[in-house]
Amino acid sequence: MKIGRMGRLFAVGAFLIFAVTALAGCENSGGNKFINIATGGTAGTYYPIGGAMAEILNKNIPGMNASAQSTGATVANINMLKEGSVDLAIVQNDITYYAVNGTEMFKDKKIDNLRGIAALYPETCQIVTLDSTGIRSIADLKGKRVAVGAAGSGAEANARQILEAYGITYDDIDEQYLSFGEAASALKDGNVDAAFVTAGFPTAAVQDITSQNKVRLLPIDPDKADALIAKYPFYTKSVIPAGTYGGFDEEVPAVSVMAILIATDKVDEKLGYDITKALFNNIDKLQAAHSAAKQITKDTAKNGMSIELNAGADRYYKE
Image 1 (cartoon, rainbow, N blue to C red):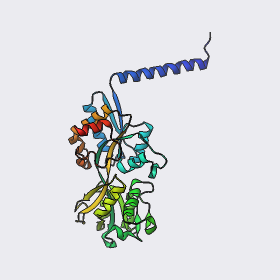
Image 2: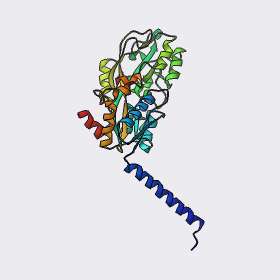
Image 3: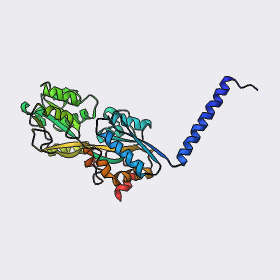
Image 4: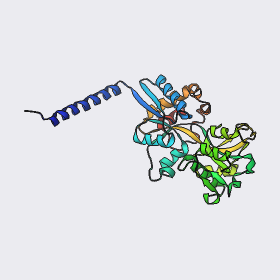
């Protein structure tokens, strides 16, 4: 009996599928664990910290093959977790909260299977103005031109929520949807009066302004911070130390969102426990990767965690 061309192609295809499946079985039976860690841009904070995480996991978990990859940061990372192309991701806790609740940029795109591993360090909501504007409080922003972050960004949602705590809406200001870099340029040129920036401090975009101008950071009053946290549980209170930016020597009460490490429910309890234990047993190597990572501690690992914890991570924190 002759086998036609299509039959031969089918046979070759079937063999390849069998071979790949067999190979995967060998890798799994050998105990190898392949973990992709989504981070952010190579110039940012997430990338070096993610690289240190991969190194720690490879050295401390038998059969582990972890690698960190550069990505478009939080929103992209959450979508990659959803697609299954990565296993762990460093993300902002507020945007993760939107994803699991189907709000903001994840409206009607709710993701149910995200699980927390650890809260890492704060990313602070900084409201910046030039000293020369005379603006001294968030209440003074009414009627002003305010850079609120790029459209659809986490920073823009932070700006809207903080203004709301002061009874201010976009109807009360001239909102400008600008990235941090664009906002810095607009402030220097006098095209906006204030800007919202959500990032670990000191932030390069703000430092850029201070090179030519005296800046002022606007405080968030304690009662307003409490109201904000009651409504949006992903916020935490924080303080921007005096002298963080050249020429501005006042301590500023602020709120922060947290950079957190998350996974999906595909990371089971045992692997979740092993990952968490390896990271915190080698926290010095994590903290050496970037200055922001010096704020990572086991004591604060659940602060601002906006989603359900992986069961293994939870078990580790209770030890």
